[in-house]
Image (cartoon, rainbow, N blue to C red; front, top):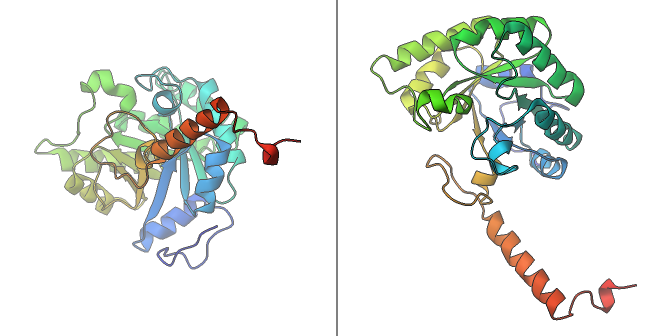
Length: 277
C-alpha cells in the first residue's frame, strides 16, 4: 500500500472506519474516494491508498451502458459490492441504495440497507435525498447500518430536478442546505455527500457540520472528494462533466493494446514460440 505524508492520521489503520473519517474532519484533513465496481480495480485503488471506495449506482451508466441510474437493481448492487469488498484490505467500502429500494417507507429502507450490508460486507450505505429521508436515516442507524447522506444534485431524481443541473444557486440556498444538512446529521448520517453544488454553499455546509463532507463538483472545502473512476482516468467515452479532472487516458492505452493484439493475431505473430507449449 502507498502511504503519503499528507494524511493527518498518525498511523494508517488496518481498515478505515467511520471514526477515522471523523478524526480527519476534526484535524482539518482530507480524504479521497473513488467509485469502483470490481475486485481487480478495487485491489489497485486499495493498494494506492484510497481511503474510501463507493459502489455507486453509476454502474448503470459506466458498466451496464444505461442512460441513467434508474434501472439499477438491488441484485446489481449486491453483485458488484461483493466484488469490491473482495478486492479490498484497508479501504472503507460503501454502496448506494438503488432507486426504488428505500423511498416507499422507512421499513423498506431498513430492510434494503440491512440486506445490502449483510449480503456484501460493505461498511455503509448511501441514500439520496433531503430532509424527507431523515426518518429513514434515523431508523437505519438504529438498526446498525451506517448511512452516508447525499444531497445537492441527486441523480435518482433527475426527472424531478429537470436533468443534470447545479443545485443551490438560489439566494437562500446556503441557509437551506445548511438547515437540511444539520437535520440529516441529527438523524445519524455519518457523512454527507454534496453533488454539483456551488463551492461557497458546500463550504458553508461543511463548516456547519461536525461530520465529514464529501464533494463531487462542489469545490474543495469538503473533507473528502469523490469521482467516477472511469471519468477521472479517461475510460469514459463521450462528454465528461466539467468538474472532472482527468489524471490518465486509460481508454487510449486499452485501445492501442487491443489494436496491437488483433494485428498480431491476424498476422499469425501471436502466439509465437515463446507463448506456446
